Image (tube, rainbow, N blue to C red; front, side):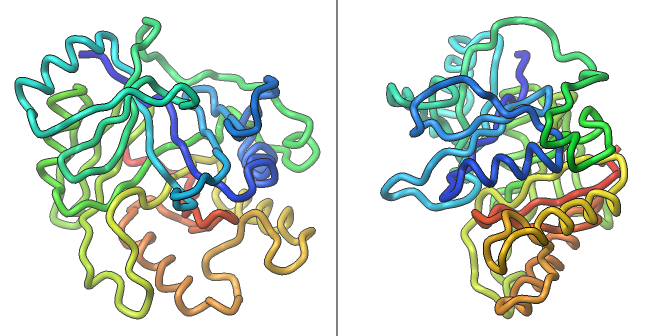
Length: 289
């Protein structure tokens, strides 16, 4: 089975300004295709798509799911029926923006499935277009800034790691003495599985298991942090599209605890941000390798 992580989807109250932030700071390509506003905004880092969809009734704002493309979806369904009969899937509704089917891992974390158009996973593009927004704000290289990992907190750590490795063929690195996480990679993108425990949430609101954060690889973490702070300083208080979790605010104490949680659980994390939709973002000039 050949598979790759193809997209990340987030539910947003502010798709356009938040998308502009990711374009301006991380050099992501903002898709200008005319489509219904209900599909939100689409960005690309040259490898995967980041879709910011407007909030619908019954949906929670924030990270929602990720998508996987496979080279033979019929064979995948046969393997799920044989090896994981408790795993189900449903066809996406007609207005679904990403993937063809919804499915889930053994702990219930959602992902979409779609048939790939062929081709092997190669190296990341050496060059990416430099948008006007990025060029106005940064002297950096957009090709050096990309989504590096997608993190999930789960109670079924070993079972989910085995599932993604066996079903999709993702390479697997297990826990070490100093790191309890599991890492599943398609060769470009990493799915990071973090152990979930209610005791980690002392002093803050307890959030459910599932998507935790996305991580960006950048050429220099300190430089990108300064760019984010500078860009967001042009907004009135409370209206900035992204801010450092340790920034002073009315929720400073809880934000600092959450920042420490992310820093502890992500060994490469240099700075922890949240965007206006509450999506946690890690930036780093390091990789898991």
